[in-house]
Every structure is written in structure tokens, then in C-alpha cells.
Length: 301
Ligand SMILES: [Zn+2]
Ligand SMILES: [Zn+2]
Image (cartoon, rainbow, N blue to C red):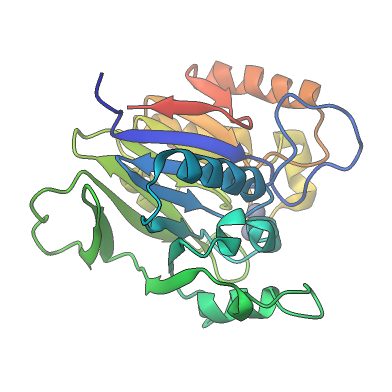
């Protein structure tokens, strides 16, 4: 059987911070991290605490499948630089592997360049090891709304969305900036394979009446939309303006964008499994194909 061309695995779907009340949870405790495989290309989106398990899995797989002389090439994307999307970064196993070559892909937000943010974050006194002292190879790439990253069997290209699509691509990523998240916004990602399957990650955004028209267009006809749904509507009032949505807002976008399936993400860390299951039940009344994203959930196309 041939390999699936697009594979997604969720390593963290909590928002803000990992729950600290000690109750066991079937949803998972780690903050956002999504692994996407396009053919042999490995992409990781966000370095919340979920990236720790994700990195360990990637390293195990590299040792098992790659030859002695191979370079362990992966791509790391960021939605934005808030701590819940960054906290696992210093513990990401691929930083400690001499054969690892990481292509960092992220937009500049609020004039903060990704390389500087990471260097300042992973540096004494916050962390005993500096990023500069680590052996992995690295390249930094800017991305913006007018650029797409195209993936081929064993390479990638960043080019303008206005140019013709290159021959031989097997998958691509485009991005959209939301301004509905303090203070510099966040970036959504749409990942597609050549066959036309699409997965959209829209984390860290607050909805509004009538829905975000740009996001509706961006997510149009996607197979899966992962949308911020941090709050139940009864808890939203005190958190209005924090840059997160209710499940009602997520369902509204899913419906208007005509997606196949909605996954709720960025779960509030104070919510129990019971509360989250209740949110899922209520969301299904609005958009039947809704599910809570949970750790180690996987889907393939
Ligand atoms: Zn967040
Ligand atoms: Zn945020």
C-alpha cells in the first residue's frame, strides 16, 4: 500500500498552560504542537509542551529508518511566539542531534525575528544551554500571506502565491494572519496535498459576529478545520478580548467555510474532561461533525 500523502498527529491541544490540578485527563495536558507529514517531509507546527513527545518520536523514527549518513531534515513552523506555543522548545530532542537540520519557518511578528526570540528564550539564566552551543544545523525562513511553501519528494521551495505552481509538488502550506489575538496577532496555516485534501490550523483567534470573512475564505472546503475553542459561552464574558473563541464561534466558521470536520483546540487548562465533553456535545448540536482534539489523535489522507 502506498504511503498516505498527508498525515497529521496532534501532540498537544491545550491552551495557555498545562492543567495543574493533577486529575487524569483523556484529552491530554500538553500545549499546542501538531506534526504534519507530507510524503517524507516532516513538519512540526508550534513548540508547546507537546513538542517534547513529538521530538522523541521523531528521533526514534530517524534512528530506525534513516541511513548512517543521512541528514535528519525537519521543518518547524510557529503560529506566534506566546509562551504556550514555545515552552517545549528547549526540550525538543532534535536540537540535540548533530545530524539534525531544522528549517525554521515563521513570520516576523511585532518586529521580533524568530531567530532572536528563540536565542533569547533558550539562554542562561532561563535555561542552562544556549541555542548557539547546540550541534544541529539550522536555517531560518520568513513566511508571509503572499508566500507558499511547496514540498517535493525530498526538497522544498518558498515562492509567491502569485507565481504558477511548480511542477512535481506533493504538498504545500499557505498562511493567513489573524489580528484577533493580542498583541501582534497569530498565523493560521493551511496544509494541502496534491490530491486536494486540506487541513487548516486556526489557533489563538477570537471570533466576532458574522465570522471572520478572511478565515472563512482561507478555510473553505477544508477536510479538517482545527479552530480555537478555548471557552464555553458562559465563561466568555470575563475573557472577551483575550484573543480566544468559544465553540459557537468555531462552529460558525466551520459551517460558513463548508469544512468536513471541525476539531476544537486550545482547550482551557481549567476545564475538566467532563466540561470538555459537554462542550463537544453542545458543539455537535451546531455542527455535527465536531470533535475535541486530543493528544495523539491522528488522521491521514
Ligand atoms: Zn495560545
Ligand atoms: Zn497566544
